[in-house]
Amino acid sequence: MTTLLEHFIPEAGEHLANATAGLLKLERNPSDEGLINEVFRAVHTLKGSSGLFDVPGLTRLVHAGEDLLVDVRAGRLQLDSEIVDLLLDSLDRVSTWVDALARNGKLPDDAESVSVDLARLLRARITSSGAEVTAANTVVAVEGPPRLVGDFPEADRLAAFADSLAGGPPLHVINYQPDEGCFYRGEDPFNLFRQLTGLKAFLPVSTGAPLSLEETDPFRCTRISGRLWPSHAGNWNIYSAM
Amino acid sequence: MTLIKMPLAKPHARVLVVDDGMTMRMYYRDVLETAGFEVSEAVNGLDGVERAMAEAFDLLVVDVNMPKMDGYEMIRTVRGDADLKWVPVLTISTEDKEQDAAKAYSAGANFYMAKPVRPEDLVEIAHLLTGTSAP
Image 1 (tube, each protein chain N blue to C red):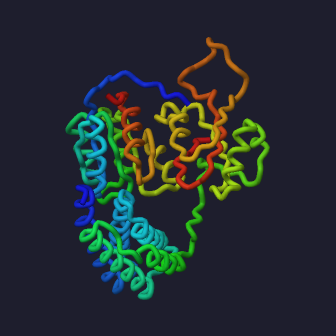
Image 2: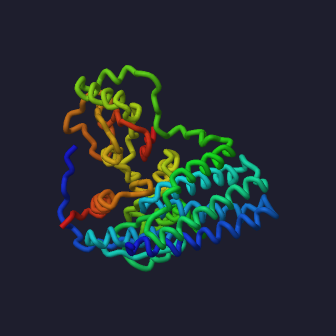
Image 3: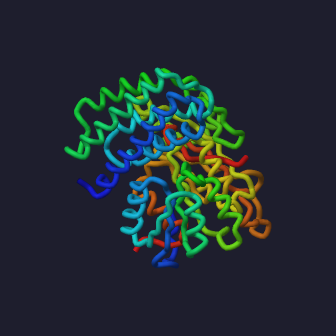
């Protein structure tokens, strides 16, 4: 067993115990915000750590539980005994998986299918479907084939489309334009771009007319405006301060 | 895109890892120490602020959802402190939603990553933010 896994197992046990104890108390007092937060944090931290290991079933189930608790915490979903039971069942299952990890270094063979079923049950109770209102200063996802797609080099476009058609993830275009003062907030647009996974093409676009060297202020971000073409929208950690 | 390698300004950059998850702290420590960083740990935002005020760090790696003081509040506190306001901050959150990144940046983070973070990405960003380079 790796050292990291040795640390994960007792920590996971602690989070599971805390979440379970919190849920049992919530059953009697379903609107206790402090308790809801406690349960959420335990599940949330467990999900974060589980991502370090190759235990997709466990992460999937904990993630579904966390998403449900997000709704509860936001007041969009009222806890009832049915939901609490569902969460307790899921935590119980995760506990047995953690035990299996400790014994065999891997999840039981049926973990994958069980996690899919349980996660589906949990997600069926989620009302918001995760569709939160996005703030004004976030990525603008353009639907349909926008005009700027034509600005990308032909070869890049064809390669990206071919990937997508061959069963790859759908294509997205992002129009990202940092504001002039972004450097002062420690933002680095090029670093953001580098973070995008599956980036197919990147097209920097100048804003406004070119300036002479004398007119250029290196502390103002006026020259960088990017149009990105990543192949999937899974984990974009990008934001623009427009 | 070509990455400009910076000179090795600080051979032993000191990193403070702030996360309430012990396994996560352990992971960051393993990855960063292997890459030559000196690593200290704090267990929540409040602990993080206290440690950052007591010792000099070249980089703060901050989780978002923590008890006592969350990551956003910790970053705002750090940015409001005359001695700490210039310390680079890397936020690593379990959330991968855009608004989470936006919150981190507006709190004053220099960079945002979503868990799980690959070791090579963490090391690269840590080098970039501390102005060091791989040996």
